[in-house]
Length: 338
Image 1 (cartoon, rainbow, N blue to C red):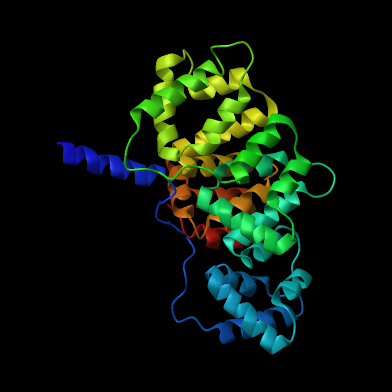
Image 2: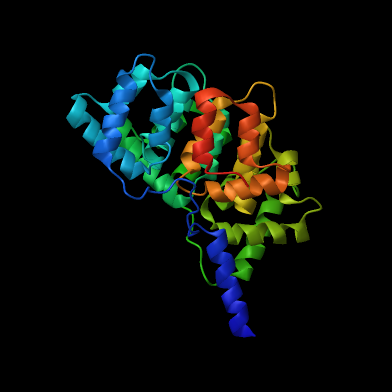
């Protein structure tokens, strides 16, 4: 019985932590010929009126490393950079999507973080989504790539564009100090953290946000899942209700996003996609960002949660709410109907 318990614990921990297997919708194509693909893209760009469909057909059905090979071969042939050529040939939402595919997942995340903080006003919604939903490993890679791409530290830009407790939480997350998942369940620490969250919030006047930030940003995901369950023993409200009562604005959204991602990250992304496509005006930027950033990571699981929770497939929803070449590109990345 003890052995069964130990196995179940390990399964739970590997599922809840950062070691989940990838479930991409875009995988490397067999019989890959980068020279042939580069030649076809060159012809598509040179064609009068631009053959967008050919560009989409190739670039949305190749993996990131394969696209990099195509870009190398294109530059050899055309004596110009493929990204610059695509910028000149495409426009609007399709351009943003295709250019996103020409970056690695970490490069794309880094560039999206940069664009959410540049110019007048910060796009807090995008910032919260990306910082609060990425694993420790993803954040460490994003920071490294951000430094290489922009010659600046991500932490410095985040602190310069946000303020107060919201800034403190984002910075604590970006520092990527989260504990690694452990195969040993520390029940005493779970109980202490649950009680600390209660005593720092609902059980006192005013909120000790520093304690909340410390626990939310430093404990492992499986540990926090058990903390949130234990928290119900102390508080008359669950952790989400407590967050809504204790903090407001961007800080509230950030804590809620963290909880949602720890409970079920794929459902979080599915909900974001559903919200972005349920109004008359589709939030193209949100749809593009989630599809592009997750298509080589876990979009298959996002698709499953979408169908389970919203009554129709992600594929059908894209079909209903988008159009033209942009729609075609999204459907290819989606990888099929459910």
